[in-house]
Length: 195
Image 1 (tube, rainbow, N blue to C red):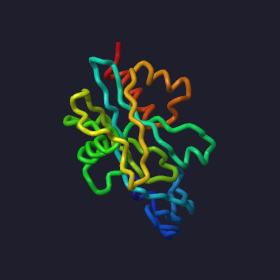
Image 2 (spheres, rainbow, N blue to C red):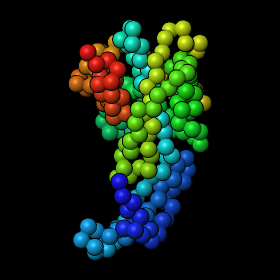
Image 3 (cartoon, helix red, strand yellow):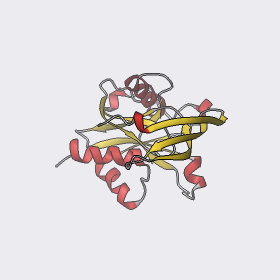
């Protein structure tokens, strides 16, 4: 990979809104592939980085997913609760530390060994967010809590333990439409539950 810093000049970054996260209007100059400089203006939303995890049980051939209300998907016409993997913002913590806390909050499970499998920018045309993707094995004995999320954050999470085959089929049926969940299930199909 090559550093493109010499091709970008940030001219101005104006804050449009900064409540929970930062929304900016950025004016920049971009040096095109032919060497010409082009003025551009973009809106950029910075909500920090995050982490997502697929909990799996190899012996039972099962996974833990969650189901919850997501306002943005509702506003875009999706009228179901969203089925997803546990995930959340880093809030200044290291990804491995934060994802363990998120798992406990959302699912009630306690996981020790988490393995980072990749990183990805989820919507790089607008968001600065980079997600750290993890997998970890779980067992029923490692669930001292009930999960459900944090009520003070408005979370009302249902925990689902389903077979990997059923979860993977939910992609094709349209019952799983969350990108991070699809990516982790695809990873598991190739690397964990490969037959």
